Image (cartoon, rainbow, N blue to C red; front, top):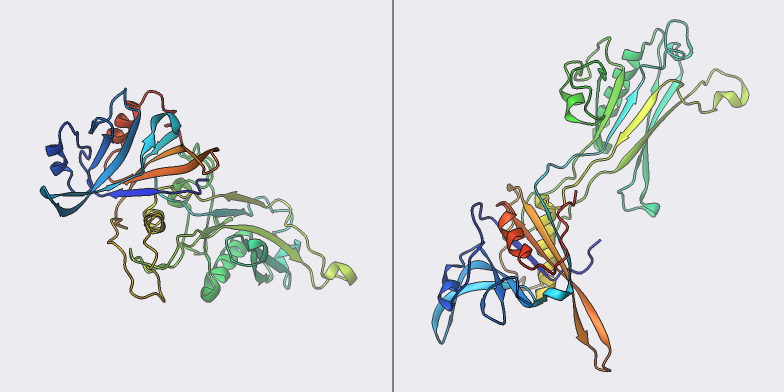
Length: 370
């Protein structure tokens, strides 16, 4: 986990976003969202012989000095090539949510004519344990109880449990649907949790069907004001599911004993968050302002002084992360290293950026990050 961030660049330039510098006049072409990799010793673009450089991005503004108006460029700290730990590049991938599949197809030993769960008055409890809540141990449980009627089938139990979960809208953090995992489908080579299972024609919208033997619980997304200047932080619902039944008509201890439904299976498919999801980029850009000394940017502070954010929540971002540890000498002449990173988020392909970094042959490169 990267815990020290010094520079975050967000570019919405979709085409070529690299500017080559060979003379001072070339800086005028560093428009908003375009990048420059500058060798600070030669004042030109980096090459295989570069030892120190910095990364800049045009802000779209101009500043005035004794030489007239020039393009404003936001710069990273100086990066020593020998102190680079490595860099990674990732391309956009859609986020997925946590999904749990409760498959009752194999529970025919308990569900069917004259069998235990097809009799009236049996309690079936689905317990969801949330792991993203700000409580002790980060866990919170919600239990949903369904009481069976005479003549229940696998389909009716699955359908009624899904309806029961969706009915509790005020405490809902998952959405329940029912259907059948069709293992004979041409798409059956896909892993459990893929889009195939939701798009399969055997999936219904909690309607009665003889094929409804599986309950799929899909995590809801966090509520957000969907704005750039927001106090919200990105988060994801994380949960596990369990299920058991009790028989209140049984004698003594057995009336409250908890039994797993033999033959049922519960499959958990963890959701994935892409490291450059737009709301994560929003959070990273806002947090990185603290490293620039921009502190009064939240509710309850006045005046709120903050530059405009570059992130666009409707965009899909690719990312390049460069890690380095520049060495410095302390006051008592000890050698220390400062952990630093440069995070580059861009809607354009990262090939131009990685090509520039690849010129630094001494850097450690890792482009296989998942």
